[in-house]
Image (cartoon, rainbow, N blue to C red; front, side, top):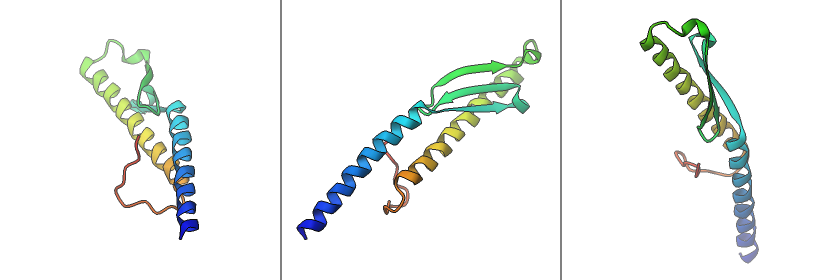
Length: 107
């Protein structure tokens, strides 16, 4: 029983180390969200921080409401991509370890 508990503790410690490493990798990654067929692009980190906003010159001077909608859509696209990237990374880290349904990782 003692050896089994020690094994579980080692697995938990290794998983914690892997999660920390994965979190650091995810925070450093960047994704690009876009809207309007690439007329508006957003570069966002894994921490969901926007690094860059690019707006095609053809949109400048156009309808302000449309431009605002395209920027919002590009940001939302980037946020969804970050979420997908995190989900895929966590699936790799937790492979083989039973995680309860709906359990959210700490980041």
